[in-house]
Every structure is written in C-alpha cells, then in structure tokens.
Length: 289
Image (cartoon, rainbow, N blue to C red; front, side):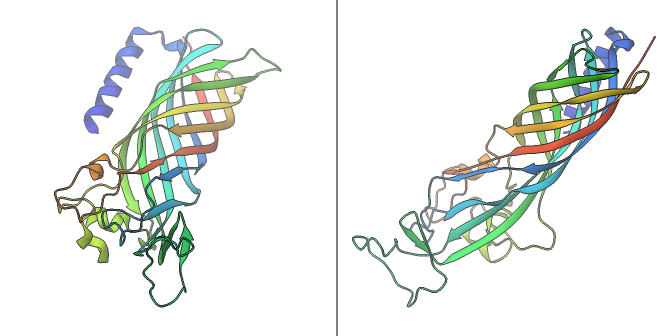
C-alpha cells in the first residue's frame, strides 16, 4: 500500500512539474454515503444438508458510511478537465444468513424432511427449511485512486456553473472489521478469522486466519452538481455522487477447492458488490500566475 501511494505521489509531482501551475485546482470534498450493496447467493443449501455449503445469505439493510477526498484537477480548457487525487471511503455491509437445517421444505413431500420436533423458529424459502437466522455488520475502508474526467458548463448565472464527472477508481483496502458492539451472527467473520464457536468449521480451508474481504476493488464513479465561485479562484460545490463497485468483495482466497470436503466454502456462489450513493460537498482553489 505504501509503495502504491508513493508511486502515485511521485507521478503526480512529475505531472505538475511538466504542467503550468495555473491550470491546476486543488481541493477537498466530503460526502455522507449509503452502501446500497448487491448481495447474491446462488447456493441456498443449508449446511447440514450439504456441509460444504454456507447456507443462504442476503442483504439485510443498506449501511451508511463516509467519503472524504483530496482532489487535484488539471484543466485542459475552460470546460474540460482531468480529476485525480487520493480519496478515502467506507463500504459497510449488513447481511443476514439463513442456515442450520438438514432437510428441504416440508411443503414438498417428495423430498425427505428431518423434523426437529417442532416448527418454532423455522424459515421456509428456496424449497428449503432453515432453523437459524442471524445478521452481521462488516465495515471496510479503502483508499481510492481516481482517474476521472470532468465537464464544467459555461456560466449559467454570475459565477454559477454545472459540472459532471465520470471515470474509474482503483480501490485498495486499508482495514476491515466487525461493527463495534455487535456479534457475528452471520458467522462469516468468525469463520474467516478462526474465532468463536464457528472456528472449527474452517471456512478458510487451510487453518489460518484470512481476510474476509477482497484487498482490491475497481469502481465507476459518477457525479453531477453545481459549482459557485465565492471569491476569485475559490469555488464551492455540491452534488449527487454514485460509486459502483465492479469486483466481488468476498475474498477470492476463500473460493479455492479444499482437500477436506467437510470444510465450508464461502465464496463459491456468493457475490457482494458495493454501490455508494451520497451527496458530495467541497471546495477547490485555482492557482494563478
């Protein structure tokens, strides 16, 4: 991570040395965000019916987070510019896992059904019955390296313009954790980190602690808004931002084939992708000769 950040800074300084300083704007922006994540699980089999399965996982709710950025904007012309910098973002997930039963839904009598002596606490879906349901909130943070192109309109009113940005970002994970003062009732954290009751099931296969989330993400960033020059060369701006993750965030190392068929596989049929929506606000200063 340090090498990547250092490389970006060196490249940025080199670019500045070759460009005219009065074509640059430097700024900061902040955005409260909500992760409207996509969580898909194509294998709903309860683990007691197929021990290598991880049950059935869905998104429980959208989770809020924070986006903060240092920006550097190089202006090709009055209307077109290139935007980069170093951005910080949180991508938080709240998921529910249904699991724990050894039989299909009794509504389908052609399949064998193993009763636990009662129906209390059972969940029926996907032609299966589950006796367990639990949620967890996982929090991740990433540094984003943006490669963004920006269009700024001509003045619509005195000092007032509209803008739009679009482009990819390269995201490098800096931390992951279980939400403070919460339990891991969906079990993924415990099984990846070998903690708690679920450690023996070895979802990370080789008996070693592993990261639950992918160390990288690639996203597409889009924003639209308005900018206003409050004094010479100093703009304030605000608008709507969208940041769509393209990479499955479940650690790919959890997907490997295991020599022990009784070890549970997390990533085989699951896809977790982020989709941040927020309102950005900030300021940018343009240097003059």
